[in-house]
Image (cartoon, rainbow, N blue to C red; front, side):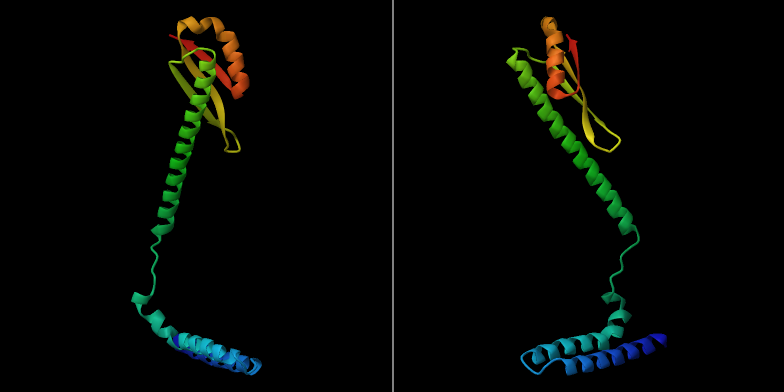
Length: 159
């Protein structure tokens, strides 16, 4: 019964509001547009109980949708994070390889290690390079050169 009273009140309030607005709008080209808008509004108020009564017209969003969306968002963030690290690691490996090639040195493997600081930013932690035993004589120069270029610790191992 209260729903019927609310609907009747909304209908009356809409009619009063439309009457006041009609008095304020000057009679000109705007009058036709105003009448059309008022008719649509009045029709919406008139049909509102029908629209809310039939469940087929209502959209029911399940409660698990928010949790599912949050889980998918976190999964996407994780995938994006891993891909970004992979790309950054690949580019850094290429840079290190080029710098070693300029000195005539070929690395067996180059491992790039990242860390996350307190602000959640990813930083280059260290670079581990495996070289031939013959390249051990230039270890001090290579280590200091690469550390100054990369801004991170460089560890050299030999096979």
